[in-house]
Image: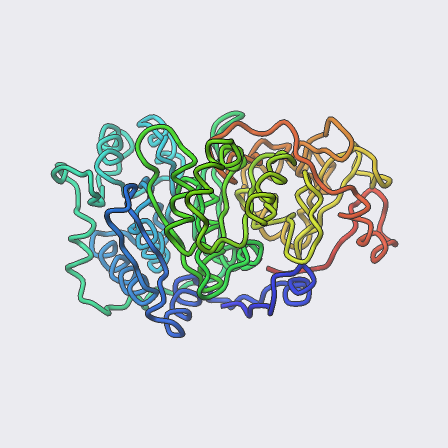
Length: 499
């Protein structure tokens, strides 16, 4: 478990993580983070789950989450799953998702979460691409998968029982029943882990071409300590995230939250079309202190009808709001701040990374911008040939992939894109962006089309046309001053960080 700074300011994060986050060679998130927080605060809530109509509620303590994930690991092992096996997971927002993810990680197996939008052909593609050995889902997801399970050679199907389930499907293993057969307080502590073992496997959205696998190691999960600081989380804080569990934003929320010993609020969306009242209701009923939602949700929250409803349902505890995935209108930020006193803080990251640029605490927010570069990442604005640009010039947002966090995650996470990336950047391996269309505006994505700003970050919205960032003088000039001896064709190095 990483040492946490005294506050969430960028200055404090620079001081705490300027040289990277020390990671044990045998690091595994469940044992090194979840279990450590369990020993400190066993009865503190890890997850608060509420049904869409608020008639049912479930609180899972840190102690219970630790115990159930240990028992889940042993249940999976009993049915033949072992270290290195890839397991597809397609579930709605239920507490079992975290029990399953942490259980597989304890076993050294690799969960591959998928969104609720995936149909049989999508599941087939993913199962064949990652050579999956098992599938976990609710009754609907299991039915979809069993249509193609024989084609992909994956007969092992676990069904998670939910409120809306009918009978257990044929040839399926009842997940809750399998876990209940493992004695309480049983431990899955016999598996040897390494910090560079695979922890998670995500598929990009496939906006351009087929979805690509993104391979994430154990050490990656510790890196989301930075993300949790952007969320401004700590023990006693409650965090709500509006993303589908199949997107990498769920990993941002999971590891960002639990690295800081906070509580995750979970609620399945009400049936039918989205309505902003559902968000206002949870902010009114529960002590949620931090909210992360895509711009599309914030836009609905500032409509006249939503603001009228908000006036009748005052917010209970919210003191921090953040957003990512696509640009957020300055007018929306202003309207929300005028009504709540809270400024929505933007950020940018990708499926294979943690937060790389963000509006952190203590920094003045320029409306329409996504902030300053996070500790350990090397971010700059460059021209078409990789040259460093003058202040105020339009260019490309670039992340170096030969040093710091970029080397640790971007370059390693998508091996099939490595050779293409090297060709595109003349062997420098330092570009992860496209050209912009207006001053101080960049289109953020990758030249390899392996991930896009929206595809892995938030929800299933199309990739944005533009993303506003701070001018180069604010993002990048301080790096130039510190490393003025670097060749002009290479974005200056912030530090030789290790994560």
